Amino acid sequence: MTVVLMIMTSVMGAGCTQSKAPPNTQATTLIHYNVNQITELTLGKFDPETGEHWMTTLKRINTATKKRITHANWEITSLPDGNNIQDRKANATFIMHLLDSLQGLRKTGDAPNGALDSLGLDPPRFVIRVKTDTGTQELRIGGMSDDKLGNYLAMNPSADQKSNSGKIIIASGSALKMLSMISSFEYLRDHSWTPFSADDIDEIALSDQGKPYFYAQREGSQWNDKNHHPLKDPEPLLRVLTEIQPKGLIDDPTQVARALKLSSSQPPTYEAKLIDRRGTPVILKLLKTYGLSSTRPSTLFVFSPEILTTFRDSKQSYVKDHK
Image (tube, rainbow, N blue to C red):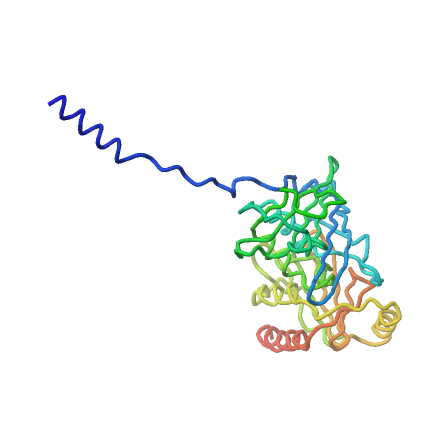
């Protein structure tokens, strides 16, 4: 019996040899930093199809604040050649999400030997330089790999590097998708007319041609009018107003000054005044589809006609319900 067991054990052992697991090429994080300690971001883009080529630098101007995303305040400090925008407020939400996603880049393979231009790295499709108080890290992202599993990437390359010396890899991650969203330099600008979200707001006042038609204040979990009578919840309206994005921004000082002069000489088409929990107000004055925001005085916002419909519908809905 003992002999039989020994033979069975030997046979089973020979037939059950463990196969080696493939190496985990995605285990290594390519870039390391605390996103809240980043003080400067340089971003460059080259589009081989359109020839668009630009580079810009953004700085976080409230670096002492350790809170995230909605409290981050980024400013464009270096403009692409030929750009002279006045309002340099950057899209902080996108910037913070991009910095988060860059830490998710993972190696999926090694790039083939060859000249950098054959890998889309001379010039690179994107250059990303992240600066903290302790140093600077740089990523250069090239074209898509032949197997479509990622993009060629060079980490902290030397300035005179002209070919793959074994340090170029194939990387994948959501950051590549986010970078593809940057259709132009304008995408990095903040297009929001208000820094508030709907949840930040405690008071709302709307007017039509200078005539007030709706006011609501948050009192606990209830929205009331000036006489503390309950109102229909304006949260849906607040979300539309705070999240609506303009079609574009006008920075020309002459056009902005003309709009400011016009808004002071006649009532705006519509006006919205929002006050947050700290008592800070922000006012949007609409001159037809052009908007002036009290927090962005050097910029004229260009909205679609949808924003006029929002005010018109709010007047019909809320005034009717609150009579």
